[in-house]
Image: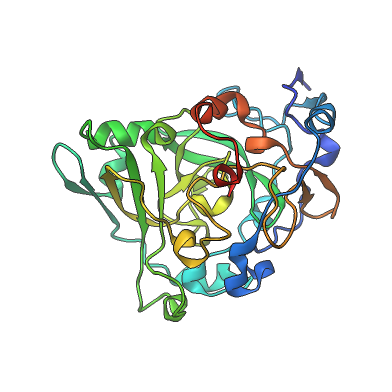
Length: 321
């Protein structure tokens, strides 16, 4: 088997996601208190020392592995059966309820500061983009981690297709809100529909991805079918599911969790072990299935691709919540 030397941010294979459980992010938070996940202190030298390793190539193509996840894959069954999709409730077993998600036909509205607003079907969109597989690490704000192979396309391709005006500085994503099939919409303290945002620079970064599949199959409903956002350097709640609208806007959009719990969740939500929230530390993350904990790495190990996006910003808690 091919042996490759990975960058310093890689974790050893022994510390990688095992193959039998994926915990529910929001269930662990206990409802509205979910918004209180945070960060903890850990020495940079210690974290980097833990990641000077050599691991085995897991078998995907060089293109799929070019962002070097450094961990073996979470088994498909486990990754697809322990999910978080508040629109269907707060249970760990949300994958069952999510099968009611209506995905055909599916359209996405693209509007705001674009040359010409339009609505496009999911099928037509897929004819206009080049799909690929990317193996990414996923860091949950609950301090657990998995590694999965996504199918989809570069978000920069979507931006090009939209033809935004020069005045557009941010993207705002809106998820489906279907009261007939989504019982979670009755939870009164959540500002439905789910909505998230990115800067234009983040959206056009090479890591930013639009997911349409998982494990070489169409995106499971519980994972955000048929189309979702994937941002591996941020906490998972930034990656909105089941997208129905993409707006290009001038001002920074307020997001779902900012509105729900502004003291705990912010706009940026970049992974960083050094910043605790009011509840607990993010210094370490639990590897699902073994309960082993390992040091969390800033930007979830993707610093070399995304750190320059924030070089001119104040490196305080605001950037990492």
